[in-house]
Amino acid sequence: MPFTSSFAAQSATSPLAPHQIDRRALGPKDVQIAIEYCGVCHTDIHQSRNDWGASNYPIVPGHEIVGKVSALGSEVKHLKLGQQVAVGCFVDSCHTCSSCKADLEQYCLNGFTATYNSATKDPGGFTYGGYSKSIVVDKHFVLTLPDGLDPAGAAPLLCAGITTYSPLRHWDVKPGMTVGIIGLGGLGHMGVKLSHAMGAKTVMITTSKNKAADAMKLGADEVLISTDAAAMQAMGNQFDFLLNTIPVPHDFNHYMPLLKVDGTMCIVGSVGPTAELNTGPLIFGRKSVAGSLVGGIKETQEMLEFCAKHSIVSEIEIIKMEEINQAYERMLKSDVKYRFVIDMNSLG
Image 1: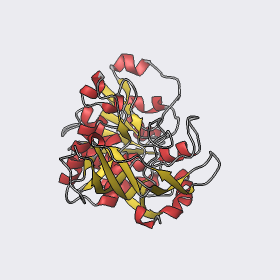
Image 2: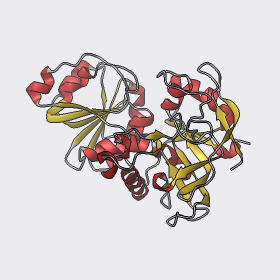
Image 3: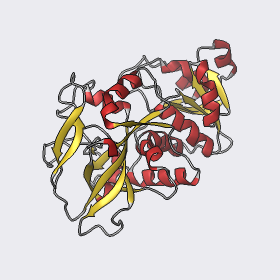
Image 4: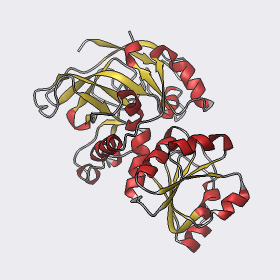
């Protein structure tokens, strides 16, 4: 296909700017998508600025993609031209390992191919993401957007939504349970909405009293201020499950006393080393600390259907492509409620 307009970072210190990329030609199992909206994830900043030391330039971020089918390979029978579809955090996996066979492509034992910055045989040698006019994706990794979901508000569901939905489902959150969502940001606000829709008593746990009103609007039953020692003590041993969405290293031991016996805290926000683990609460309360990534393709489609049924989308602020660098700076200051989404029609 011809060259495609995008925004890319050319180095760890350069701002994102217009850049032409070459997508692969449409294969028999491929779907070409004209991108309408792309959510902005904190990962996009990390990758653009090489915070994790593995960025390959030029890098075109974006893995919360919603658009319409613009061309179909000869073997793609379940989609039609003009249909609204979505692409999440990965666009390929080995298809043969035990994880892939169990619909857990996100845990592919041979490594999944991320939507951007992953080695590929495509032009350029690395995948390019959704900050672009179009993308070509293997049919297996293309999701269908249910009727009734706002396409702009649905874009962040492909990362923030499934990152919180997957652990809530895995730990079988349901009515009668008490669930704490730690941190009210791009992930946390989705965690509150989803936990509430699953019927659990949902408590927003935050350091900021200023976020209490927002948390209640999003569906929280209560708000717990984690810097209030007395309030934290009063809520001790009351939570079946904690979803920890804090995106920076922190002392998660602070939250362990909140868990009931057999309770679990799942970490989805902070990637990398953190505070030393105190095994005492784990041993004396049979408590668990766990982690979770996004969901597989089957579960992500399930999540989209669940969100359509319960009228759940992300709280968003729509921006133009040219505003992305300012959006990054605002994200670093937590100055967004709660997810930026790029209107890709603004990209010439």
